[in-house]
Amino acid sequence: MVRHKLGWLLLAAACVPGFFTACSGSESNGGGAGTGGATTGTGGGSASTGGGVATGGAPGTGGGAPGTGGMALNDAGRIPCGDAGTCNPNNQNARMCDIANQRCVECLTAADCVGDPQGTVCNTMQGRCRACIVGSTAAGETCPAGQACTGNGACIPTCTTDADCAVNAGDGGGNGNGNIACNTTATPMVCVECTTNAHCAADPNNPLCDTTSNTCQQCITDTDCTAVAGRPFCRMQNQNCVQCRTVADCPAGATGCSNGGNCQMANPEAGPPANDAARPANDAARPATDAAAGG
Image (cartoon, rainbow, N blue to C red):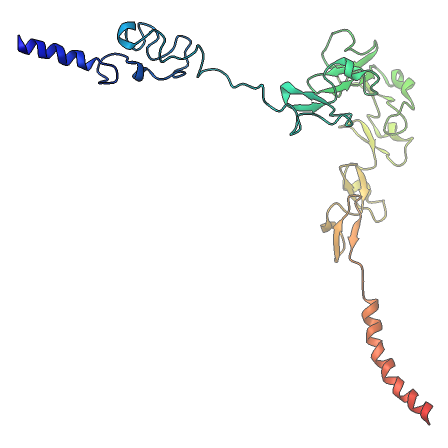
């Protein structure tokens, strides 16, 4: 009988909370509030998790509030745009705060584009005011009949022949001719500045057609600049003939190549030393002059 009583006492002591961990789910072993983060509480909430209700402690103890520990970060205090939390209202292209994408943009809705010369449609993917949105069929986001929407959100006339583009002569195209050529290889076919050099004849400063951009340019390769005196290199930023693209293109002694494509040379200072060298000879002559004056 004594042995049986001692055995029961030891078993009871082993199940006292915090005494041993051999029995299932005490309050301390289940974790404090927030541990686990499950909605029912991990570590002693339900009868199946961490032990029974009576053995593991009060129902829910150790699980914390529903969701605590697994909740997404709270973005309420995040600065939306820039360190100051706002965008510069004087910057036309970045005056509105797109909080969702953490960027300053030109527009958030079409209301921000009223009167904008680029267009009255807000391309929310770009955050820019445009005349149209490629692929859109929504009212107000498409081009008028006879025009197509380009990748930059501009509406340009469609065509089948150059004759369809004649009406665009002098419409402000980069070569002065306007978009007078029909690019029949495009989909849809649209009016562009040029498809051959013949379309650039009206602009002697830009006589060559770059068929990649369908624009009239002064040069496409260095070879196009061989006839331009002192400017043998084609600078691709503006596709114009320049004296240099880097200082390596310049004569010896150059200190750099300017943004305008001109070699920058060091200022010669040979004059002052030559004058200084002559001064001792003049000084040496002075005593003789003084002696003659004394005679």
